[in-house]
Image (cartoon, rainbow, N blue to C red; front, side, top):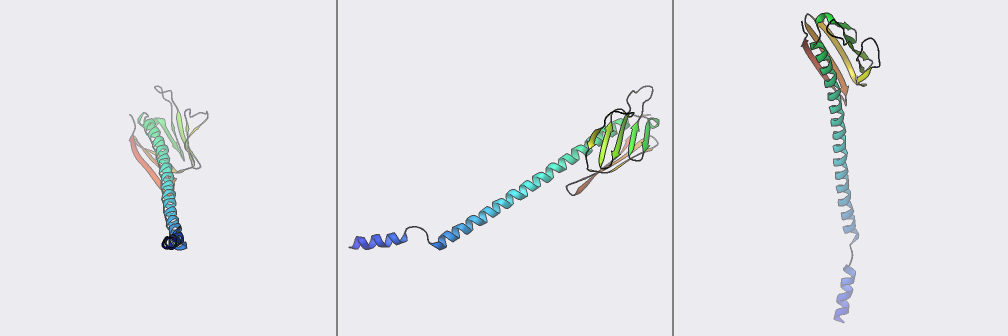
Length: 160
């Protein structure tokens, strides 16, 4: 008889109470929300960083291409107009190239007289300014993406 009473008491204690189940569910919910938040903010940061790297890569490529063309040109071989620059042909160089701002894009023409352009900066160009001052080529590019603006500015010495 004593063992029957012990077994009945133990039978009543098997399983979890509703309070224990609710506490476990609440703990699991808090953990799931915390993990979801961490994943969301990590993904957002990754996406912003990826866009920033792409923005920097495009602006650096354009800046370097124009800088190299300017270093290889004499002041008389550079023609600057609003939103474009042409590095012209002379007796020693057979290359004519042109960089043109078209809306928010920066286009590169390997042949300034025609041909199809290559888009160097696509949809993120805010400002493109080029000026010639003596034997210096002044260059300023501004690109915008992911809520920030990057400005690349340089003064390039052209050849004599």
